[in-house]
Image (cartoon, protein in one colour):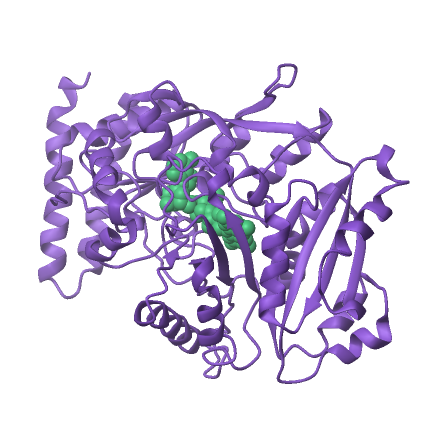
Length: 537
Ligand code: FAD
């Protein structure tokens, strides 16, 4: 069958190459683009008919696949594949691979589309809708051995894994702050949250993957079998294969959570306490923190969901113009611990040096705690504030540089109310498996600092996209000039030179893996690391 299709491949290749050629020379491209797109559709359709897909190829209403949470990059694909089986994905990639290096056609897996800068988009390529694939595939629980796990689709949403696992009394160990993301999407980055200090990021909590590589091969990999692909794909930014299934490690699930916030006015005391907590094996189960710049009134919001130990004094803690630091911690517990949990928490808290009048405690179910950001999402959606541009900046800052970073950024670059949460919490990678593709600073302990800004579309003020992007640029410049040795998380660069610097000593391995598993650079063009039909050595 493949031989039979050679002619079609050639026609398609000529079409796509012709399309690129003409695009650069014709100023009014609309008619041309439309006719080329139609021909592309016709050719892809005939190919797909021969491929006998069980899923569907969609050619209309493609705008959804040209959008993401960042809402700044909008690259239309030629088609969206809604696969019904792994072999649909494998057949598509095999065909594109056999078209050779010059076809220009690329393939991107799209999870829940919560990337920030078009990372799941494929300009004139084929976007694979992993979320619909995830919905059509089941979850299999293996909970009786000493390493319980759930076998899920790469397109499964973490929120659905949580609900299904709880029916068996289990749950994954390591999370992201927001659960409406797919397994493939977070495993391609890392999946870091307040549990990572204890369990490592999500990429450290996977036993096995099934991957479709850039040549269309379906490969099962683990730490011991095809381990190069296994570690390459984890944190691999979608460069080496599409994750079609994953075995996610589970633990017995807690029922309830004591969710606590305490405030600090001194950064050093704040970070000392955070570092103390992440080095302890027997204290809280979740450790995060955030920076509050000039946020008078925030306490009033918290009062609706948190009980404050001393409300009058706590309200006096805040004043305009201040930067304060909030430690957010959580302790999980089960029914049988109800009697003792408060005492335990008091003991843990007694070792911390927060401002005593600012203890906020809430008791919620495990699901409520893990799905907490979704509550904010629903509120923002109601106000039409969820689908705005999100110029986020996520940095990993070495422990030895965090004070310099804070003194340069908080109160200097960021002087006014921030345009969204600023998270800051340490992790210790000496407890992690660091064989994955994830790039971190060299020091074992580093801080995740996340500027999670929302931009107001019509604004020209300090909440405009331009203003926030210029602030992000200043932060990156400070990191550079003060030699803070930071790394970007959810990285975004425009040139290969920048990517090379980002990967540092890991670059050669990354390139070698690309040549091995996706030699034509078909996969995930939206990361802008490798370009199809160009050389990257
Ligand atoms: P997409 O955006 O669809 O894809 C992300 C990348 O992975 C793309 O390059 C895509 O091509 C590739 N990809 C997708 N599926 C697959 C697959 N099956 N196989 C191979 N490659 C694939 N991250 C954290 O670590 N911690 C957090 O606490 C956290 N909180 C967040 C909160 C919100 C509100 C949002 C919007 C994002 C958050 N993130 C967090 C970032 C999030 O992990 C990434 O944006 C993630 O990529 C989004 O997953 P997705 O399923 O939407 O992936």
